[in-house]
Image 1 (tube, rainbow, N blue to C red):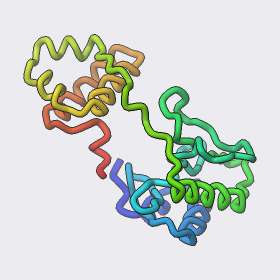
Image 2 (image 1 turned 120 degrees about the vertical axis):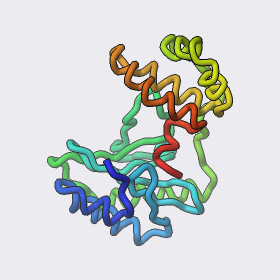
Image 3 (image 1 turned 90 degrees about the horizontal axis):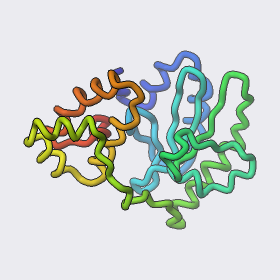
Image 4 (image 1 turned 30 degrees about the horizontal axis):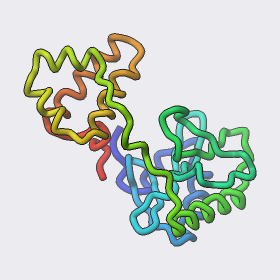
Length: 197
């Protein structure tokens, strides 16, 4: 999939969710947040800090809040899309059957913005243990240059690659993922670097 050049391009490519995305954008553009594209998605920032982003998938459209776990969520609408992987990022999801209350959404955005201004933040766990999967160890045993490149990466990038392989359920998927990441490791880039900064 080609990266979206701007938010208008992103919305224009969405057949099913165009109307709610346009309304989300209208609300967000009336705030003090700045609009940008990150990871191919519309993201709204305050002084360079990500506050909220928009996403659209086959079965739902939504907003994600980078520090969503700090929101009061009095309506009990926020969900963790990656239970066990993320602790701060939460989403508001809407399916075609949902009636979207845009006033409620404005409240979530306003609270998230205020939390950022107050300096409230859940920091990622930097001390997470690195467990190198057996498949990656095997490749390191036959390719010392690759192992050296891997060891030069930041701990975050090393964990990102290790988890990417470990999370694959099937051996075939693990093999394909290994083939994909070997050139990236050799170029000294992280898995998420491909999405751009």
